[in-house]
Length: 392
Image 1 (cartoon, rainbow, N blue to C red):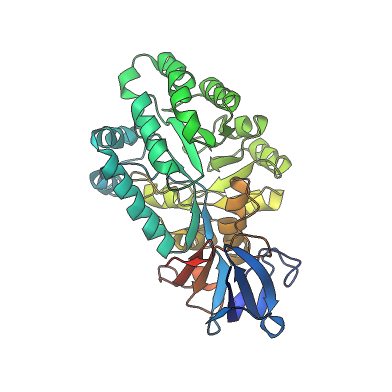
Image 2: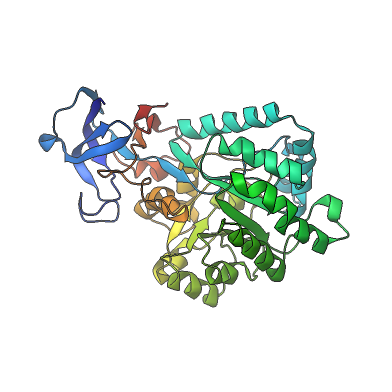
């Protein structure tokens, strides 16, 4: 197996304090990195780098771990431009717009859904994302949910069953019947393709009791819980996520002091995944990352890429928003978008660049990761390696 030395790295983010300056980012200046197959074999000062079969000159630019996008909705069809335009003209956002995408997704062929998924994955990869999670939730029938997960599972191991996105239009007058479907026949059809189970615990979607039933059933089928929690209003989602030891509570926009305390106490189990693209696209209140971090919660950043409320695949954009509007430092935001996302997926092989980790990394056309927030909107990712292979 051949090895590759990436040398002349101006600033290397390892996310391993023991390798670098002792900070959470584990920064190494004037650094080098050795890739052996699909893993990192060595990282440290360039002057001490071992020999390798091939080399790549980073020319003084920064290298960071590949972004870990731990929350997205990429198996869909259709377009909600008209909804976005109306919202930017004064109409408020609610969960109901999902039905538009459900209709388009049901009408699409498998080939159309997969082509759209691959287009968005390529778009994200060019911006430095090397790991992504994605969900079902735009089919809301047994067959459509199962095919969404089957298509997704061919392209990522991080697949989430979200039959409980909203109550299916087919069950508008029988929400209890839909919960029975989601926890019964639909779950049985979908569980073989998924690692996670999720629920939109929100006014207009599923209440606390319904969400508990869905997550408990999913866990009994071997799926690990995640929760869309407290996005639009205060509610039971965060407390439920902590109680059920969910891997993440996602959105976390409307939090009581008790919610913040719960996430802090559960920092080793349940990650607070913040999705600033949704607030940007809906002109909603920003999540208060500073409040969570100061309390001791573990925070991740993700895109929430979906056609309705956050149609962005750009992790650098989300980093810039988090720094500008959510109280995060550039260091905290980058950690949240890499190591934080890995924590939200309960992974130790990604989100860092240390010996034994997967060789997923991005080369920035900048001397430091701080430029991700310092130069918002600029396409700074100039090269990407995924599993040790140059991918973009």
